[in-house]
Image (cartoon, rainbow, N blue to C red; front, side, top):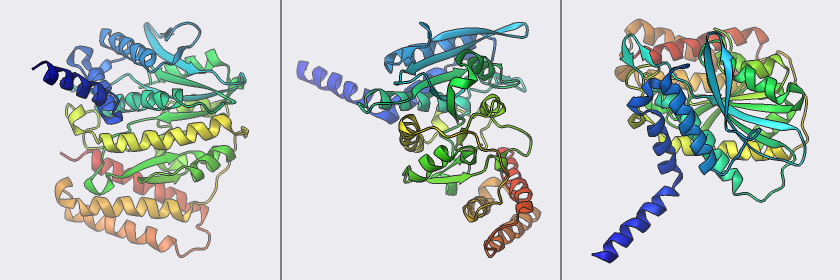
Length: 367
């Protein structure tokens, strides 16, 4: 009997070291009913900050300025950013971050916020764990930040950037919803957008490997209604950024956004991919911010066309009408025809943007 107990204890210890087990455990902790969806300015939000501070410590990150928790004013409320870091050889910094606050109650129903955005918090800490264990020298310090008030005016990311000093920040990686499957055919897909803002980011992205399908494109693809995440403050300060997301799903801001619906294998794959990006950027010579409008690439066009085709394949599950099917088929055909251009016209960016917006709306409105 004693040997059996010892074996179970050893098995439990081994499981604690499996990344997917850790990812799910932290996601579940952040979605506990007592946290009430981590609504900004709420007691549940405060508890979530404490959970993240403990997770930062467990990952062996160092507290930023002697504390993991940093309060800031947000109108009549008070927000709490959770910030840890790995020092580098210089004072320059790379920021990896995303918001941890959730929508709380929507329409009278509690939204746990598993994918949006507990998955990104779990992923960020897993990235930190992997980097803590590496011996390679780093030129840049790496700041890991869980932002409060990421929904709304994004005061948390603005406050952190002011604390760090924009002149010290070389680049920012924004993590937003990392474990959702928009439709069955997109279970291996995620977005990595914004690398056009920096030559170093573009090179790091080009050299990172992953068995997943990374849609590498311009941030314009998802900005039909304005900036999508906490990268906004950094871009305004002309700091290069990369926005990484698995995309919205039918569970977005609904009671069904629970830990059970997430793809933890995908989440681990995105983490492994981002570790390569972070390691590359932290040892490379930084490059400045690039602001330019470039024509759509063939890869962007084919990536969006693939998403349209996958949504069409899931027409029954999504409950698509005949009119929607016809419209999507037409858009997919037009996109595929664009690849016949040697250089796709700049004006076609708007068509790609509108097509992707339509796809995301269809996915989020599915029952």
